[in-house]
Length: 253
Length: 253
Image (cartoon, rainbow over all chains, first blue to last red; front, top):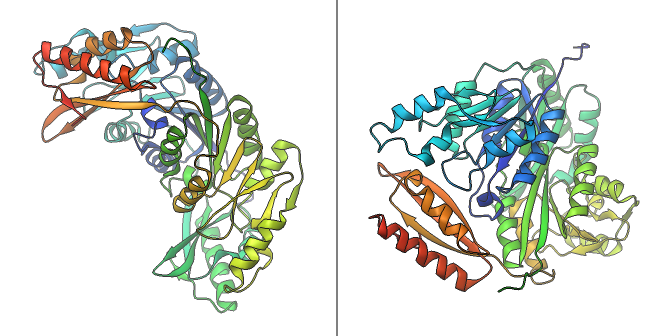
């Protein structure tokens, strides 16, 4: 426990006009964050940009340099507004090539669906030097280049690509969490939260208030890489709430 | 129409461990994006960071410098993990002070709710020089400092703060949109989309495919600041789809 384990980090870049216009509610941040945590990798930062070459290039180069992994979602379809592959190739300073395996996958997929036309062939284009991430959902694969993982924007297709990557990335200890709930205004027990966090190493306590059935309450989420610390902190918080005349609800409300 | 109108831009910074851990599904991006558009302001970029001083300071200083407006959500509650005000004050190089009006608002709000304690008084702290954004929901106000608007993380409270700001920010022409739907694989009509966009100024066409009731289809969203252009492009797209033997569905599917 005295030993400091290496922390593996990732960034996520969400690409698409439809996110910034408010038309589409993003669901990939929560999905990727949850998946990463199981891999022992922490999502450290997210950026969302339009289908804009300069904006994508800037974000890709900043994020890939300071994180172990960079994931992107969106902009890899067959239409003119899908420019993610071109932008990432430009960020990497490499050309764009047709990946022969991707072409073969698309030929197979579209054999009974009208054939492989020019637009569909766009989905076989990758930054030179890339490998593929399988996609059981719709033929068109995701793309890996170095520490960059290029995925679809449609959440169900993204899920399939994450599934294909499960267990293949090096990570560290997953962050575990435990929740203690209480029917109390968080502002009444703020000192207890601060002190409990301060007295325990390798733990963060987040406070998430709510207003439900006419009453205020809050869930306190404890995070740590150690199950023993989680247990200690949960017990300390429960004892502290009880001492203040409050009932702690294990698992949250 | 030949005249190029000034485009007003905004960035949004979403602050909170709960977003990056995947525990909470963000809803503020879509909400703020939609609201901004009505004000004639375009959401150009979004970043999401943890409750981390350095990460917030870096993002605030980058985003406020290159956009007309910067909005933040999250981290302005009463507990130890709420550090947004301190981080923004540090980014601005100013101190943190108790705003007298905020204090008065909180005293009134908590008069019948157990009184104003030290934790609750934290919600009256602002970067020196700030003014307040009213919040009808829960007492604690939002904060404005220069071109930065500091709002709550809970979406219903954020909504109240946006409502208070409606019509107060200078903007340009709102982006209008029209949707044409079609039961077609987008990859079969990619050329039509590209050419239609190319032949019309001040318009973007986004293609959003779906798989529903066992069939593939797509909605094509046309965006422009001109209602006349929207109408022209919708008509051109409809004519083009019809010429390809496809039925265009006005308003989308």
